[in-house]
Amino acid sequence: MIKIEALSAFSDNYIWLLQDAQHKRVAVIDPGDAAPVQAWLRKHGDWTLSDILITHHHNDHVGGVEQLRHDTGARVYGPATEKIPGRDQALVDGDRIDVLGLALQVFEVPGHTLGHIAFYQPDQHWLFCGDTLFAAGCGRLFEGTPLQMHQSLQRLAALPDDTLIYCAHEYTLSNLRFAKAVEPGNADIARRFEQVEAWRRGGQISLPSSLKLERATNPFLRAAETSVKEMIASREGRTLASEGEVFAALRAWKDRF
Image (tube, rainbow, N blue to C red; front, side, top):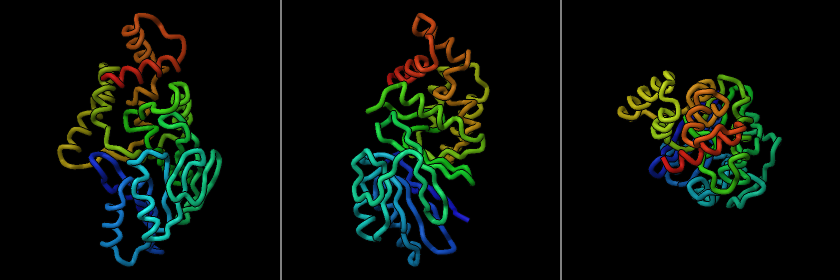
């Protein structure tokens, strides 16, 4: 059995650490800072870091890679079309890799960056999606277009309901504030906001989320919903023709929210 632990980094990043207790080895996803991983390894002195998985090139996701690779010799996987420090294996859509005995599928999900990838474990239904899909939100469009991000999110939204969403930031509460503005009558959003608010007061993280919960409460997965389309139409002063346009208007609103 693989255990997953969140290591906090910077102000709101999570480095996901996967633990194989049988062989006392770990893999990490998006180590923007080497220090939290080094501290974990020191605390667990007979464990080794075997694999480093990268979703995209931003420094808060890759800043610790070279130090960790130097210290441990871990193998580095990352998107083929982005500059990833120390990368040993370049990944493209449809690739499958074996990490800690787990088969992981690679999805290309452009939007936040053009080469962004996600890792999906189809047996456990685990999704490590970096800065593409957030709990109750999605990443900013630094390189891609709204249409690219919308298509990427729709691809992830087609995964099974019980898929667990391991994204890279603790943005859930602020995302839910926006979701409440988009759908003030959505009782699922209101309940989730209260729950996450209580968790954060108690120092508990809000992740992982589930895809079923995201479909019910994440406005960026709900561009086809009448309540979302009506809210956007009222703000834009016109009815938008497609889900992609609704998504683009949502993302632009969130950027100013």
